[in-house]
Image (cartoon, rainbow, N blue to C red):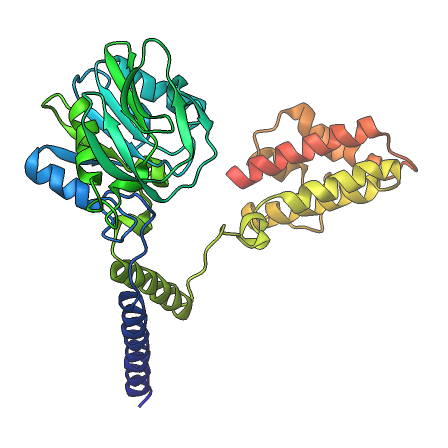
Length: 377
């Protein structure tokens, strides 16, 4: 009866957790996925999956990078790293890594409204209306139409090459870094899915990509949109829910089975029950009591040894040391001097009003030596 009840209750818990899993999965799968803006695998209007897919089909060898820049290959040359509107300004150490990547012979194409002196590119803000169509001129003099999305314009140096400009100022420049190059453009919104086909945005973006592409791999930097991938981005939501509920059920099962975690504490009596801790404590107490307890302590030791001799050697307990001198001589291996000390001197110790500490220690050692001989006989 009890076993059947436990089985029914177990199945009831399984059904409850299965129901909770289904509800959680439906809630999670029913919500649209949220993507950070400018992410290369984002199909939302603010993502750049459209240009990524186009480059993969037309150029081939396109990939994503989601790790720290310190892991970028510094030996490979002619790679094109595309950075679209970083979510944060990389710290100084990361900027050093990006520079080393470019100096090794690679190209970095950075789309950002305001570079804030990234890669040493200076900029200034111009007072004019944004989000209006305007004419953009390429380095070869050809003109295209694009939406003005930023009031920022660049201040190129003599070594910089102007790639894009409009009536207000410079929109894109190219700068040499070591064996490689850095291209900075101020219109990241041209690449998003919701605007890539507007006006001539596709032609303008491709002109910058072809400026830095050297028939090698094109890499989209997704690290700048939130850092390294987390467990929430590596695994689907249904798997994470299943993993969480599995762990929760495991904890409940361990609790139900009475499992406990932590250090193991042994009861004190298990470690001191058969030790001589009590004897040592009693001896220390007698020593602290000085000569007031020496008689009593010697008497206890004497009685214990006599009880052992009665048990092991058959010597009567109530006999004094003089009466058992002959039997002690036959049974023990004590020297004649030691036997005489017990039969003559030890009896006189108890007649003294006080016993010194030296006498107490001396006779305690003699009694203990006799005790060991009796126990080992």
